[in-house]
Image 1 (cartoon, helix red, strand yellow):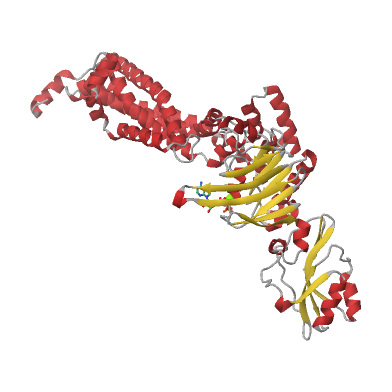
Image 2 (image 1 turned 90 degrees about the horizontal axis):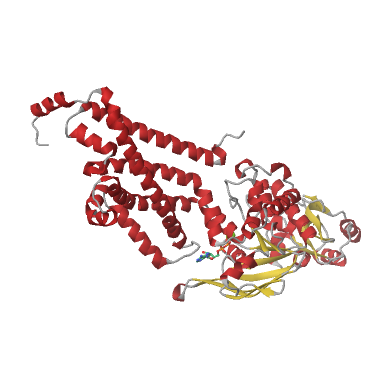
Length: 346
Length: 239
Ligand SMILES: Nc1ncnc2c1ncn2[C@@H]1O[C@H](COP(=O)(O)OP(=O)(O)OP(=O)(O)O)[C@@H](O)[C@H]1O
Ligand SMILES: [Mg+2]
């Protein structure tokens, strides 16, 4: 597990100093994947560099398995870095070495014998599904395969923390999905604490157990995915929901924005609300998915019933409904995630 | 050389070397040029590479970032780069004599050639190192490498083809410098070209030295290109 305590990073001195990370408190348990999202310039990459100690934090602690690594002297720091595997965005492989030779790099640095290195590299290649590409050079590999090599290299020294800074950025959705499911698989098999930095909200829903939003060097929101998605006041939760473009409700009918307000919403709520109101409720847009076994999502429905009665009917089943005009603007088209657990109409 | 044209024509007519005698004149000269360039390139690579690595890693963002030392080193390299070779050669005669005990011959040429070649090569290699993506160095650091391991495998290792390209450029420049050094008695092709071809108007020797220099430079360039291809995975033909 990894804990960041009061982590602060200041670049520059005196008048010109910039506080890029401001007193961050982050915990990632063993077996947990924390997604860190935030706008460009928020400090995400700086945070990544402080976590893998390529940059020394100005103050605060980086605690991995109970030991504070931030204050170690330079030589010990190099050893400490081995406990944290880092997957970089791209172009971080040695172009003149094969996939296998790239994965072997950390082992060579450590001075592992060639025989052991060979065995470990074969195991890692197998784990990331690239045994058949062992002797290929980076220019002969696809974007997704390059990332798999990067992941294998990050795991070479059996770290307890895996850090990924925009590892799926620039990959197509299909490839992103396969890299993400590999990360989840590895998390399960190797009991890793994973810090997954991204700007892609879709990916967060697929990969993470919890999420934190970094803005101007501060964590503005943090929580488990389920909590965020079922919390109406959570800006991060809203941002994580796919944007939908609802159909027209039709004459005389009014559009309502419906969100899940409880963890026990019945699956057949649409029929139940229709029955309660005594009119058929039209489904105009919806996305509902299961996160850790809890259904979350949002829908737009069209109905005739007057406002207080309709709101009460939804509330009865653990839903919150707001007339469409009053709801948050939902202008953009859907870029909906697709996963096996998911159920979607639109 | 204050010869009038008719006199020059006369001398040429008298002293053009017969073609069968050319090898006896040119082969030893070629040997001297190769020796000069070879020795100089060994010194240039041995000293220029560490200087380039130091420059690269003491610059902002390097492994041993150190502005002060970087500036001083960079300034020294710039001085070496800014003097025309002929001026440099003349200016350091006392130093050359101090180092080698003489100011003519191969030994005397090696000193100014190295002094010109080292900063040249250092800048070429520094440039090659700068072309290696930062993320490669970052990944090597994150993989637990020591600074020396990172410099070897991630920085120099990645830059090998580019450095070989720089080495080719540098070697060709040194062939040129060896010819200039020849004018002050260092021997080699340049010396032959100047004493026979220029001072005695021996057209045959002049032409032969020109051809020889073109062939040498071409061989160096083709060898360099082949080495770059051999060390770049995507340019190498896979078996
Ligand atoms: N070495 C540095 N010196 C000074 N300022 C820096 C340095 N590195 C980053 N910064 C500043 O810190 C801020 C955060 O940068 P960072 O790269 O961490 O952002 P990011 O969240 O990763 O952005 P992006 O999503 O675009 O990658 C930026 O304002 C940047 O200018
Ligand atoms: Mg970034």
